[in-house]
Length: 376
Image 1 (cartoon, helix red, strand yellow):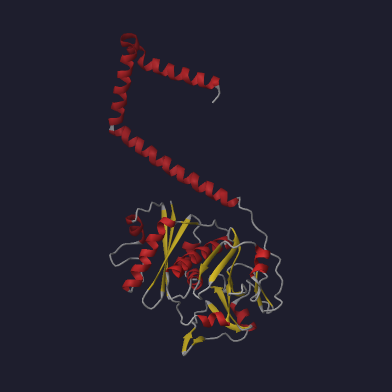
Image 2: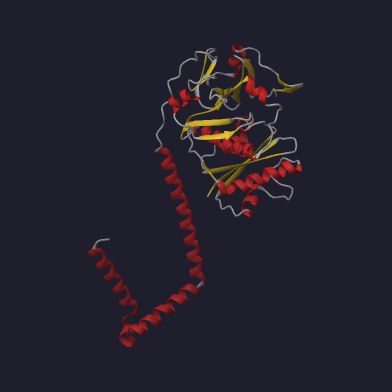
């Protein structure tokens, strides 16, 4: 504030004080004015109408602050530069490539092309999913063997090319009419694990790889994601569910978080921040379901997701919850949730701002997934 404005402000304050307390000053001086002001303030503070008005104003200020924060976040998201899609070309050695990367490529070649990874976390195959993206644009995950060669790839963005002509706009009918007959089971040792025929995905054996094509049932069953796993890596996984560990629990949690953000980018939505304060709530509910053999948003004590968040002192203006189980990985859990309308709406809700995921395993190694979405 300039010096002249300060002088004007002081004159206005002095004029207001003289208007209200000029007579008191003439009779009792500064001490009299001080006592009158203190008495008036106490009367105002104790007036119930004034208190109610102050509370209302405070609530409106908080509401306005929330709206301004949302507008700021949306504006910040809108200013994020939209990256160009890479110039994709058909694979040269394999039938499929993702972001021009094929199984067998060296990690050094991958990172020379796409840059440093954003996250590395344990997956169900006992190796890490290494995640590449730029603010979740051009998102894909790669797995490497001990020689740093690509042995697994996944994407849920339009980064797929194929010598068979399969792309993300392809329909399920196109895929089934073009590729070999999909398999109906995977054999591990002496056990044959059936592949669920729910029209949400098909798995094929091509080029000594297991290629799983996922479909979006809410987008005319077009291709929405692709998972490519080398046969040797698949056979390393001895059972349908992986062996539980703290590292795998955390890996599944962050993978489901990343997959959700990559999906939101596909639909032009702002990415969510990781809400670590909510992870405990999500993990506790997954653990409760796994330990007590039930699957529900309402726990055995009758608490809803909102009750559990409140009990854990989580402040929020909006909240939602997604649950999944029976899926061997976060990839399958995410794709299943996207094909379930209510869960899909949570994942793609434009007003959510953050997310935490909690995972737990039951005695049969089956993972339980809880996603808690919040807007504070």
